[in-house]
Length: 266
Length: 68
Ligand SMILES: [Zn+2]
Image (cartoon, rainbow over all chains, first blue to last red; front, side, top):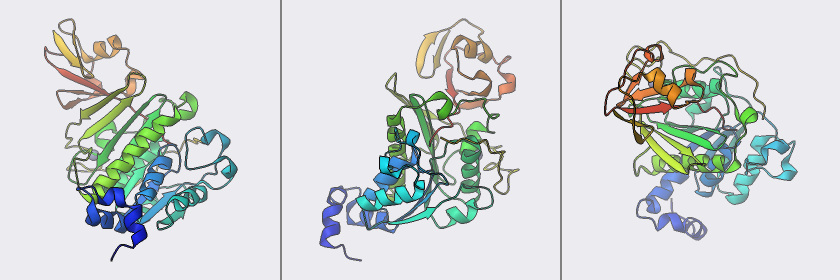
């Protein structure tokens, strides 16, 4: 496929990069990325990946845009309040880049739909806001051998890690089981600075781009943590775990399952 | 003895256990923190009887559940 003049201009800052070039841009345009959660993390990730020309982007979220979302979810605007988040997100993404195919899934992911949902994508971004969803995404991606980016944010802090099958620990290797409901505060209870979502969600987009173009070192085997108040980024090496319940040598989790879902409407 | 805790090298009392370090460092939600020593995870059940040694590198990994 030859690039049109418009595409050469739109992606010129990519194409001029030695690590991207025409080949890398073609890989981005052929790539399919699923973003689960169109909120604080998903918003910047979706905007940057659409702008980058990722050919197909799926976005899953069951909620509508709420006024309290706009402090951080920069993909939605004030007139979008009340609109389905996935539709609002699609409009913003296609306004930036009409070439991108945006598939919308106006539903919460659960054990019965996640395997089919992720099957059509090359890479998954976890932009969810609760532990049951984060463990579900991890398990489903491990079981389907699907690379994904995990992230979490709260207050002035954020963290992320990248899972690629066979290249390091999964989220469950590190965190084992979700904490009991309410044991660890959520953003709604504890608050979050909007820009944290911008920083961590953009890092998720960066990992996605690197995975697609096949350049650089991914955050596999590491947890990157960010503390905005201390302005401190740390890359913590993660041990290898042989007895992980889902990715270990004798796994006990053989298919995705749902933990009791704690309502977390933001 | 000298320990590196979350990237910071500091002096600590000899014989300090993981449980005591968690208390000393005022770790948030201490019952749900994941701990690694020299790139090995430590089971939470043995925090109280795992003593740290000079030169150990300790990391605390926290649950962070927000995102939307
Ligand atoms: Zn694992």
